[in-house]
Image 1 (cartoon, rainbow, N blue to C red):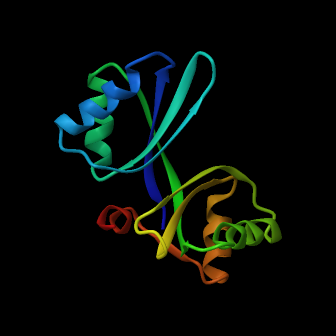
Image 2: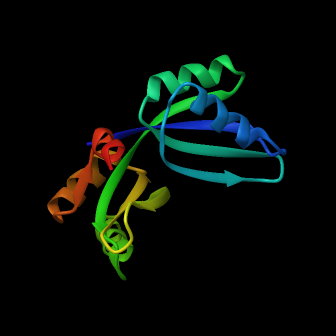
Image 3: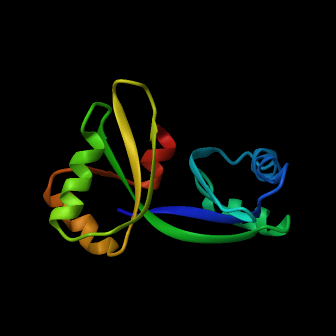
Length: 143
C-alpha cells in the first residue's frame, strides 16, 4: 500500500512555485497533498497528484528536476493524539521517520498523514498490525 509521490527540486526564488502549479493546472493535474521544505538557495516540493506519470513528464518538459518516490498514507481520526498514536507505533517498532506531512479533508473527520520511513516494508507491516488504515493513491485522489 504505497503511494507514489513526486518531488520537484526548485530554486528558492519568487514565482517558481507558481510556475509548477500553473504547469500542473494547464494539464488538468490535481494536487491532493503537498509539502515544501526549503533552504536559503533551493527547496524540495513534494506532491501527491492524481496523474503521477503525466505530472512528472510535463514538469520535466518545462525544465524542472523531478523524481518519484513511494510514501505511506495513514488515515487517522482528526482529533488530539491521532499523529501521536502513529508515531508511538513507529517508535515501538524502531522505525525512523525521514519526513512526513498531513492534510485534512473535512475538519473533525479524518486526517491523512503522509510518511516516508527508513524501512517502508517494516512500516507497512507494523501499521497494519496496529490496525491503522493505510490508503492507496487512488483512495487519496478520491477524497
